[in-house]
Amino acid sequence: MKNWSVMVWPTARIRAGVLLLAGLLVLAGAGRAATVPEAVVLGVPTSLTLLEGRESLLAVRLAVEEINAAGGVRLGPRRLPLKVVSHDLRGAAPGVAVEQAVASLGGFLQDKSLHALVVGPFRSEVLLSSMDLLAQRRIPLLGTIAMTPVSEAMVLKNPAYGNIFRVGLNTRYLVDYLISSMRFLEQRFGFKRVYILNQDVAWARTTASKMIRLFFRRAGWQVLGQKSFPSGAGDFSIALEEARAQGAQVLLCIFDSPSSGRLARQWRRLKVPALLCGFVSPMVGPGAWQAFEGQVAGSLNVIFELGNIPSRRYPPAAAFYQAFQRRWGQPVQSGHGPAPSYEAVYILAEAMERSGSLEPGALVAALEATDRQGCMGRVRFHPDHQAYFGLDPKREALAAVFQWTPRGGRRIVFPPAIAEGDIELPAFVPAP
Image (cartoon, helix red, strand yellow):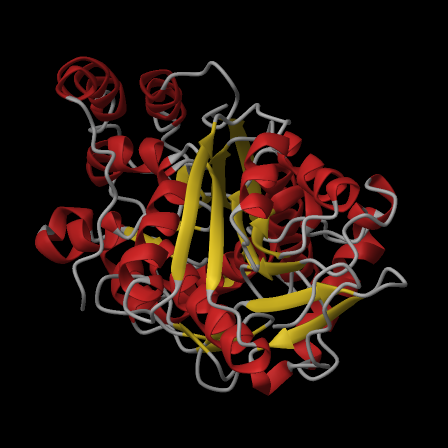
């Protein structure tokens, strides 16, 4: 496997201070006598201040309700219900330092009733800084939002981190999907000039740098400029005007902050003659059409996991999407998090039944043998505990690229196995 890396690592101050204190808290009471549980307790520690975290928690609750309605989890001769305990780490909230989120997780992990964790830290910086705590606690984590592949490298290097899995997309796979999209645009329209706008956080910086190094330079594209914006930024007009002045044909935008949705309005108002594409979280969900008054029309976006968008060509994705809407009275708005969070509960429940145990070592071994056909496609894990993503839902989990149609629909255009139509350029974006 390639050596993928993120430029943010836990600082010495965090490891020496916060991790020591929180680690002692986690280990406190470790010798308490075990009791027979009345329920299997799933912890959901994440950032509930952002949409992805909130909807991921709702997806977890939906899966738990479905499993409990079917009788719960079978452990030998017994059936136990699942129970959800959530905790807001605030790790993605403005002004919250990494060490604060890590300490918050350490406090949550003192709860000795927890049998497993799902969703997990939101930001990659928080995940990496929490891995020692998670290793000390031992129970499995099935992460669904933080995207750094550095955690997989650490799992391969150190067996102590073997309880950490990722069900959702990581930045390596996101880059693969973006490269495929850029290659398709080049083949379809002859585009070769790109301007990059990205959020100034680890996953977005890493994605942008890898796109430049692994594709644009090698494929002969011109990278006309790159601008990084803080998470609260909402004015992108200077960068958009610069992209216009330099003759950009593609605007590659990589953001998950709520204010980044203003990109669509500014792109349309300025009529920048370049196709807006990438991942801009507020422009992903069906509510974006009304929220931005149709200004998203023609833009392309990546849905990180199938199921966060329904698919006419893969019914399990539509089934989850519709079940979420029926239960919570609104459709999935997030492009990242809910579908793998839903799948994570089923993956854990099936691993518990296969192992017949809640013992962490037995659960980890059962999780490594996962082979589940679900709403994202087929879920299996690499030796580094990252779920496989690819282009065929019968073989791997899938992401999806969609385009907003002029009438407010979302049409999947990639990968070919689930594509519902071709890419169409907005009227103010000329083909070469």
